[in-house]
Image 1 (tube, rainbow, N blue to C red):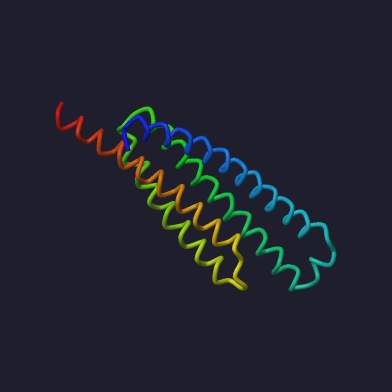
Image 2: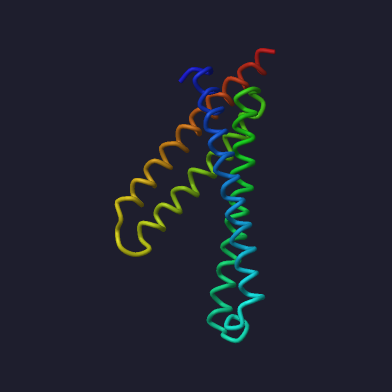
Length: 152
């Protein structure tokens, strides 16, 4: 992979990641806000422990979705920065390793949660392929920047 190809991949992947991160943040906020509103206004939730537990799970899931959105936003920003300036290549590379690991974890967890679904397998393969592509591109930018620094 050439340096120019790597920069283009990082730029496109960064933009897509930022868009996904914004959607995740919005969804996380809506889940937390909606669940909290139900918890405060629904009389059945106020009196039934099972409902309270379910609402609690929704709130925690919404917070986790928001945290994942923030992490994706940071990853997207560093992907775009690395596409413009090689000194951000190492940070982008680290975030891409984290993305590969979390994609692998979530994909395998989804495959073994219940019944087997081809959509889960396809999602895992696409996610791993894209994250691996970003990992290779970030490594190319990181390596090129390190070579430039040695020569300077």
